[in-house]
Image (cartoon, rainbow, N blue to C red; front, side, top):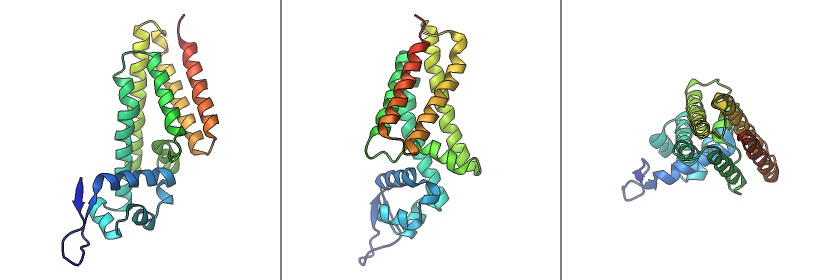
Length: 207
C-alpha cells in the first residue's frame, strides 16, 4: 500500500512511500533497539522519511511504537499461535512450536529475543497502553498452549488435570528462552535451551 506524504517535490505532486515496508522497517527497528533506544533521527534514517512525514503518517513516537507492537502481535499470532490453535495434534504441535522459536532466534537477521518480552522488561508495566499490547499477546499465546495441551489430554497423551500447570511451565520456558536470546546468549546455547524444553515435553507423555 502506498500513501502520500506531506512534503512535496518541486513539481508540487505529493511524494509516496510504501506504507507496508515502512511499518515493517519501524517494527524491526524497535525490536532491535527498544523504545528508548530509538530516536527520531533513527526512524528518519531507517525509513528514509522526514520527521513530518513520520508524524503525519504514524503520529507521535509513542503511537509509532504502539503500531509496531500491534504489527508484531499480529505477525507472531499468525506465525506462532495459529498453528497451535488450529493444530490437529497435541504434544507434537508443541514440539513444532518450540522448533519454530529456535529457528526464528537462529536467523542471522533476527533482532534478538521477542519484541513483546523485550518491551515488557523495558517498561515494567509503567505504561498502561503498552502493557495492554503485551498482555494481549501473552494471553493469546497462553490460550493457544492450553488449547494444544487440552488436545493432548483428550487423546490420552497427558493427564487432564495437568493441563493448566503445564501451560504455565510452557510459558515460563518460552519467556526464559526469549530473554536469553535478547541477552546475547549464543545461538547454540539458545538452541540447547529449546532442545531441553522439547525433552521436557517428551517426559510429559503417558506411555
